Length: 184
Length: 184
Image 1 (tube, each protein chain N blue to C red):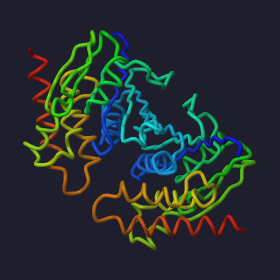
Image 2 (cartoon, chains in turn purple, yellow):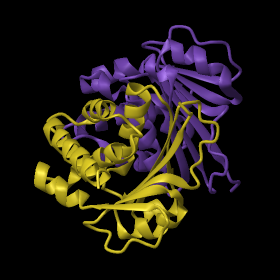
Image 3 (spheres, rainbow over the protein chains, first blue to last red):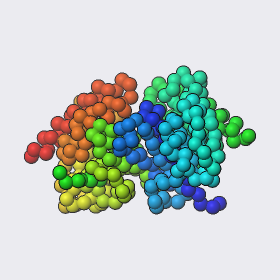
Image 4 (spheres, rainbow over the protein chains, first blue to last red):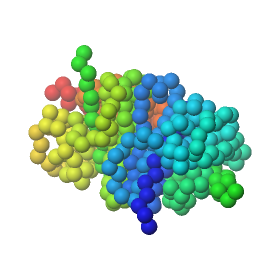
């Protein structure tokens, strides 16, 4: 099999849990799936304005150049994040937007998937807090960057006590939503 | 004031909370203190063997080169981590070891501080889980890489519900232990 490197960017606003989501994706792919992973967050004037961004590079081989410039996979959970990052996406890559908040996707050659991640989180788990976990499930099903088993183990290892069931429901709803779109 | 860049490496074993500690340090310095921060974890064969490592670069200016090679500040919470990273420390820098687990510090020109971080966590908060928070408090007092106020806000923002008081006690015990050593 050809060696493959995925550059994944998770973007949205503070409070959506994207830093934790980046760690979970990294631990699923790195600790459970056995890939080489570099996971990064950058804080600066943007983050003080409420923007939040997390990046994960997943590779079959040690990662030499840890800075993500263009991404293969972009998650945008706010309109501002979509406006900022869709144009930094590789055209052969894919974009997943949370259609709960992203009402207009900037023009792009990349394949765009729209899923109401936050509405799904509220519906299946009764809380918006796990919307980023719905997103991870959808990304796993759409891309294969992390195995569903590895991701589930990583989610449960990081879920605060008492929130395991909400996280598991969110994850499975995300898998299902992603799988449905993939088959279209 | 001269522009300054700190490269901080937090190292130990999985389960000591060093990835979360890296995020908290980054959010304290980045979101609350207003610095430019890049925070990274790398997963690979080492992490599958149980080693855990997190890196934080804190700067007055945007960080151009995000990879930490030699660190200015090293936290080593296991003997293995001390063995692996003390020799990658800049000689003008400082090393903080958890003397609960690190019984022999490899020879180095860097200044070494030994604090029984895990024993302190057990004593003040009744749990080892917050040993990395004791460590962050001590690092803040010893180095000034993050303000005590910024760090406290970041710790409380990331503390799971019901653990705020344990985290606050751990943090203050760490500040006190660091301040005491600094004055010697």
